[in-house]
Amino acid sequence: MPGDDRLGCGRGWLEWTAARLEGLCFKQLDEPYVKGSRSWRKYKVRVTTEAIVGAITGSLVAPRTVLLGRYDAAGRLQYTGRSTTLSQAVSRALVGVLAARMRAHPWEGWTFSAGWGTQRTLEVVLVEPEMVMDVAVDIARDSGGRWRHPARAHRIRRDVDVAQVPLFGEAPASP
Image 1 (tube, rainbow, N blue to C red):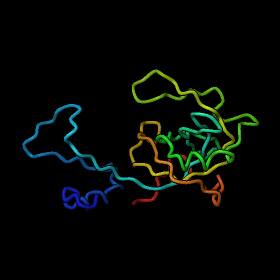
Image 2 (image 1 turned 180 degrees about the vertical axis):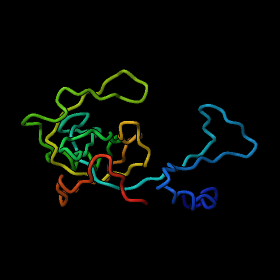
Image 3 (image 1 turned 30 degrees about the horizontal axis):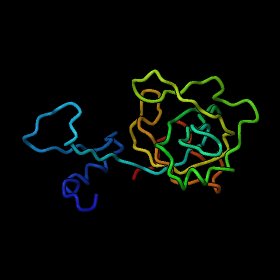
Image 4 (image 1 turned 120 degrees about the vertical axis):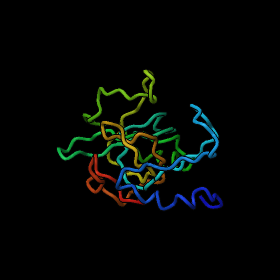
């Protein structure tokens, strides 16, 4: 981060994404580990990639988050993660562009967790999986290959067809 000399000495380490390095944590040398400590600083490796919008939270006239997917090698749309709360600009851009589910949806009957360690499920609206978005994700994955942390939705990619999106499980390009 500009102006943060702690990152200057660690910048080279952030290039080790091929070795599954997800980021760096910084703390004072004399500071012990304290669970939930806010004084530690974390820098995650993030990359921009494409994903398919398969569902939303909120409504078609006011989307709040997007649920993202990618096709696997067998042609099934797999859930890969959810976005953070959409910016007003991205939410407005989606209004009128997302199509309500018209045919059988690959995620019909699925439930989506509201977050790690919670049993609460999300109320989602399934949409036609035709919209591609640019998202920023960190490289951390869970045991099922999904993005471990919420993605940051950047923009709609009308110029990219869903068939051009990387397959589920394919790593995005290095930063």
